[in-house]
Length: 475
Image 1 (tube, rainbow, N blue to C red):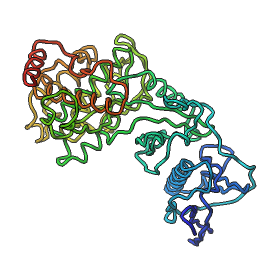
Image 2 (image 1 turned 30 degrees about the horizontal axis):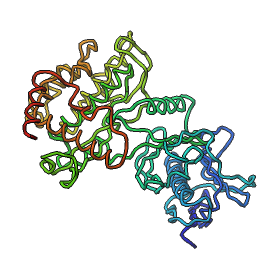
Image 3 (image 1 turned 135 degrees about the vertical axis):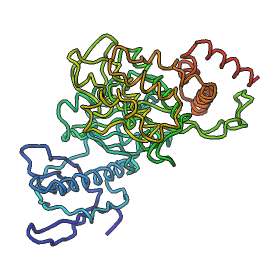
Image 4 (image 1 turned 90 degrees about the vertical axis):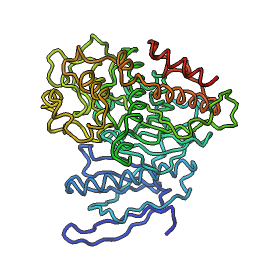
């Protein structure tokens, strides 16, 4: 049995646990089809081989737990198969074995199939670059087999841009697992990501659509805010770190809102983070304080625009969107509908979670959200809040988590709040700007339209004084 074999452990009997092993070369797979939601099929998925037969795996009559295992089995095979295809156009390229012996499958049958060939994309928007126009997914990217995450509409896997050896993330969405509404949301996400061009918004690099799946390629980030909070030493973030992250989230929303677009699903999982290394001391940047900040600094980006809508401040929609715990009350209760100010409520929930490591209420208590946020004693009852500044609590309670949407703080106003009026924050933001400029320049990538995109958004007296102090300290 070689390393490029597909190992399937299956249950041959429905009344006894008898197992046997079937081994097929992974490179002989011609196609994988998810049939779980196809009415006329009884199986979970099908594996088609070059020698004109297919395996039908799992049954819809299986228990929910077993169907879930079968679906995970499908994802595992699919990811390894994609990795193999990335290595070569030939299907005989070796790859690591798929460990599936712990996944029992209640039914595997064979049937004759036509000689299926690896299908090229029916639509594609390849990355910018010379000679990329005619190249397809696996000619441009190598799948690594790394699973980054999984959500309602698909999974995210790791890959490498072959020409540059740069890591990317690929969101894989199986069409058979989606409704027409899901596909529409996917197309909207792609349209929005292509249109947006901002440092604090996840950059879409390419897009490929096949008959059975959609692949969205984006820049690779290190983690998301939810994981970052949960993996931190205290399971919450200090005010300085929270301030840097939330400021950048509001900057991103300010950009979206200025383009009459609401994100409508701001949550910790949709805020991605990477950490910027210090600028090397021997770099030709002309900066006198190159080694002053020796620790990494966070760069935050908004992601997942599936719920985004072109929506103005005075325009209202009534379709329910977003993730319940982060949703503003007007999404569920207002007869007039909601507008892009729902994003600012969500920022309040994110900030609350960052500072405390908890949410202000559970999903089962969403219907009591208005009651809970109006009760400050209940909202800030945890001991942790005794260590939080009054300015942070004021931003959450009196500006962001405001039930009456028309009095909720706007993205154009939030940056001027007293919590952000902080010279320490200003210095860190200037350093983030400098590191981004250095990183993009060193990689010969386009710079943002302005290299001070974070700090130029404020021009009040306090900010101008910070600018003067900062410039003098660097003369």
